[in-house]
Image (cartoon, rainbow, N blue to C red; front, side, top):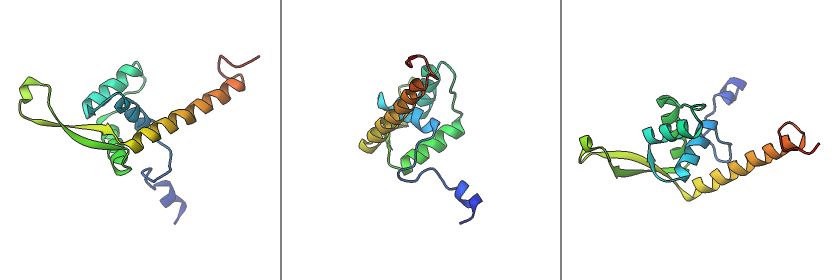
Length: 126
């Protein structure tokens, strides 16, 4: 395998870390089942607009998370009166998704602790 082939290898490999987009999606789903647009809205709300996933990034990341079995697709009735009787695809975490979300949060916490210890962030000891 050439270097360029390795660089193009998909992230959807067991044991590989999560992208920022994937982690935001998992955190959003940790609060409960949501459809794609709802995920996008919640991420923008939670990050005060600092993270605004476009539809391409969102649905590519959702596909990768589905492939890794960290989330599942569930059918739910639309809450919009104009869509009466229509089904909307929603997503929820799997038990493995909960574990990976927790692991990633712990990994990031340890990085923040390291930064604090190095006095890079407030909270570090003088």
